[in-house]
Image (tube, rainbow, N blue to C red):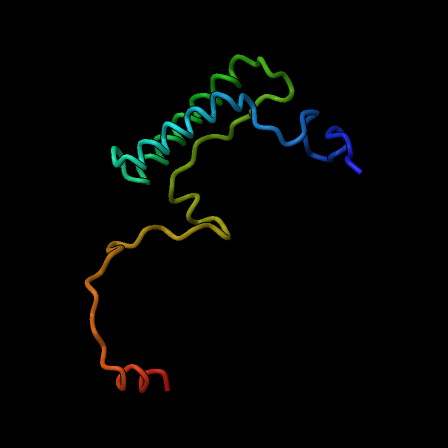
Length: 113
């Protein structure tokens, strides 16, 4: 049985729909294309996507065209703020790709004992 979305506590009458999905999807595919083509690194592409989505959501919030179903944005926070939250991903390491080293097998096994 499917319940009407308005019966879901904490959700607007539209359910869990994304505001202005067509515009957000366009931003997503543009960023994926930039990362896939090598025009941007994956991190640069995702950062650009986040900035573009925030701008779009700010415009939707300011215009109030979606009424009670429109976005309500929180104040921007630093990256460190998000890294400090419980369950957050860890910040990048200083050296994400260290030089590999070869360890003698017997030495390795002994280090585990």
